[in-house]
Length: 348
Image (cartoon, rainbow, N blue to C red; front, side, top):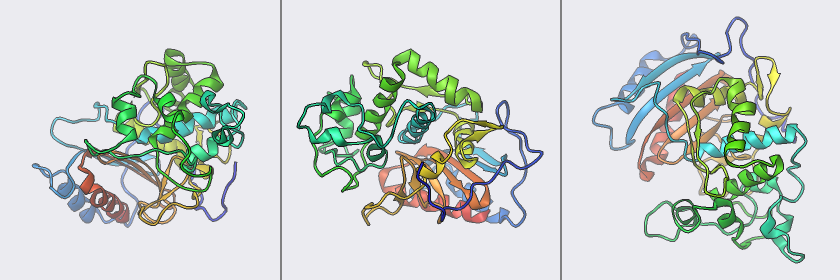
């Protein structure tokens, strides 16, 4: 896997701290943490009624040094609740591709296995999984969540494309030559999810079993509820419900370089690949982008799974820190919530 030696090193699990395969160990934040400011930020986010600037925060979890050091829930929500992933599922999809790369079933730099693109003169046939993962495929796709507007993502998930999300996305024409233009697209994530299914030779329940046997089970994630379309494709753009603690487990797998309790889950270099910046991300994006992971929310070197309405799992390698936040925040509150996450990370 390509890597960048300027990336901050990923921390190892501290000696004497058990892996949370069965239960999370608990501890206290590292010395020097501004606990008063952390409490102030949490009190604000969990205000009831919710602050207009942020919307509702339903769950918050901080893991430092492999231990839960802060946790809070709103109203009737609890550690037992599962929370929507929305686009956090994209990072889970990236992990599934990594496992198939580890097994030699997928080459991310070879043309993607997409039946719709196999015509002899179809320029889409040159698109690679790498370009799909980096949102640089060049495919037309309008990612807009405003009802009533032209939106491929709404049409794919809830309209004419919902029975075959990958087929809907793969039918889109090229808007730009592959690898020349960055465009955030849930459609490409579902094409990737179907590529994973085709490489494995499994859909529906068989693919769900693969997810649990190879990814969720080994790291102790018991709660995931992945959703599939009628064609049997994991809707890897948007739908994998989990508890906040299980999202933190997923984050810990990446913070530990794809290794869990001595077992390599993701191939060597795969996490660095995820957090290596993709060129040509437009300036209107406040964050950078890697391979199905966002970059920089909590400062240089941080990387994150980001989902609609304020679902976040943020990793800060230099602080050995994971922050998980779930809630229901309006689109106009997006930057405020991301700023709040950065402020919380700054307390540690």
